[in-house]
Image (cartoon, rainbow, N blue to C red; front, side):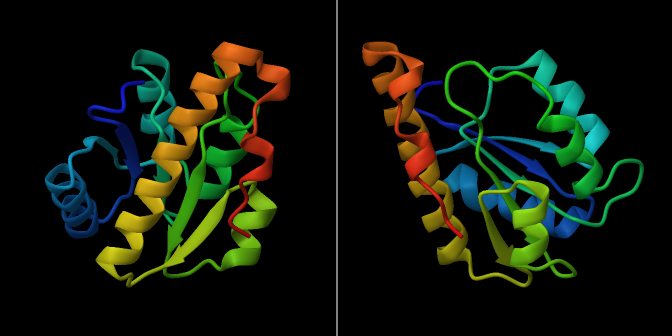
Amino acid sequence: MSMKNPRILIIEDDEDIRELCQILLIKAGFTVETCVNGLEALIALQKHDEPCLILLDMMMPIMNGREFMAAFTKKPHTIVPIPVYLVSATGDKNDGKEMGCLGFLKKPFDCDALLAIVDTHCKSRYLNIALAKTVGPQENLSSQHVAF
């Protein structure tokens, strides 16, 4: 993962919200990949480099957010786990915790709040990867970074 253009994965079935997030994040200097459901996202994660953050909707067709997290948490990650933020109108922070997400953002959301979350977690992940490569994954600090 490069800090030059950190990659964000947006999993969102609502086209308007997906496009708004994509435009906002691209303008902020991020590379963005979008998927319309959890199954599409799992396939994308196998084909591409790991993103620095996943923004996950709860209610989607084919594979919803809860089903995605159940499958995603069973997959191995490279050095530092990929943080996932639940972004939902129907869910709440307790749903996010139960699913294994790092945090929760309620829809409709403030664009500045979304940018702050993305910026914080992408920088944190990049630094933890660099640290893990230097001192070893058993000593990385990602477990200390919790939004809940």
